[in-house]
Amino acid sequence: MGWDSPSDEDLIARYRDETGAGSEQHINELFGRYHAKVARWCLAFTNDRESAADLAQEICAKAYRNLPSFRAESKFSTWLFSIARNHCLNAVRARSGMPAMESAQMMIDELPDLVSENPDTAIVRKEMADIARQLVCESLEETERVVFTLHFAEDVPLDVITRMLNLTNTSGAKAYLVSAKRKLQRAVRIWKAKAQKRLGETNDS
Image (cartoon, rainbow, N blue to C red; front, top):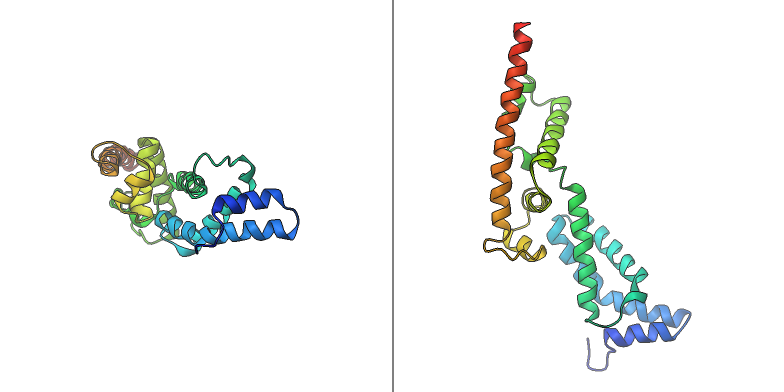
């Protein structure tokens, strides 16, 4: 932004004061300054450029709709990235009960042997995904689910997750990941024991 460029707050004031095409010009310039930055920030959550672009578009649309509530008590950029953070976290929470099977494999690597002799079938993969989703949802608290999903399914580094979630505990996201893995390992052991018992009862009948 050059020396003679209006500030974000100036653009917002002009947008509110004017009407018609001139008004839209100011708001387009405002969001044009941040769209690429928001998209890059979203990429840390998704690790997928297409998904990040979609999230950035949704965030800018949400900020535009909520612009009347912006009172300049903080910088526009701070306000916008607060919206971005909440929107991305909501997106992750929506997926946190559905970890990618590549990452879920670490906790259920022996499940195919309990389900079928052919672990490559689509039916078995779906069964494994359902089991993984159930174990994650039932075993982990919300923050543990989000950290687990961001780190393993989205490949986000732990230090980045710590900043994203504003975790203030000593070990940050690592503590939640360790706790999540311990709970999931215990849940898998219990599930396997029950599955083996059911399998034994079936063979005896």
